[in-house]
Image (cartoon, rainbow, N blue to C red):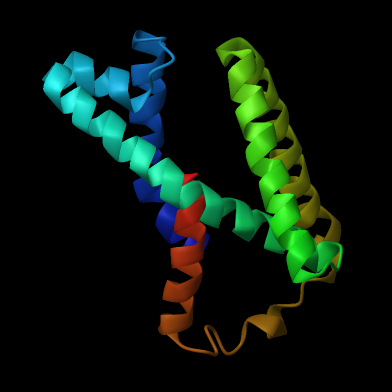
Length: 157
């Protein structure tokens, strides 16, 4: 339910960024879009806000990713921090190689994610029982909101 609720309003954002990227194929991303749309001063502010987000958000995001891996491959707290550091270093190296290389990596990651999502839906579909959906939202709609907040981060990424 949370996926459906978030997918519809997220589509216009994804479409807008895809359209802007197709029209202005530059490496600047949001900075370039702001520069074309609103001028240099707004682009500078956008660039600094994005840099600030990256400086504060990237470590948190990589810790979340490493924590997800810790569910599949049990590891200590120190190992989680080391894996997060490795993720940041890999992201830096991929971006340092250039936009063409990073686009190929991004495409490969998207293909793997979509494949895993399809596998996660298709393989267990034979064991789905209608009785498991009653009561609907057994923990209330606040729990759906919590899940929606987590999924929002997925769409934001």
